[in-house]
Image: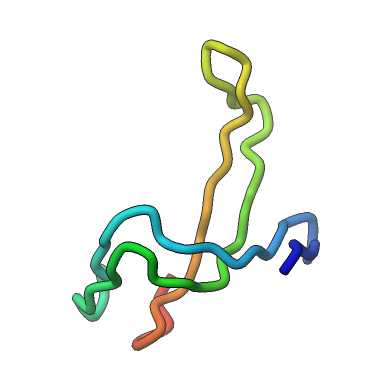
Length: 66
């Protein structure tokens, strides 16, 4: 699947690169879990090598908290 733009943000399908836990309901989501995420480009934020920095946001599949 490709990415699609919504209000200047990109919706992508990704797999989690590490295991995490929801702050709201404490449900664990393990490495490799696939979900839809919103990718935001941080304007003016780059690494020292000039690589663009992105922020990924997604919702918990149990409680829908972001």
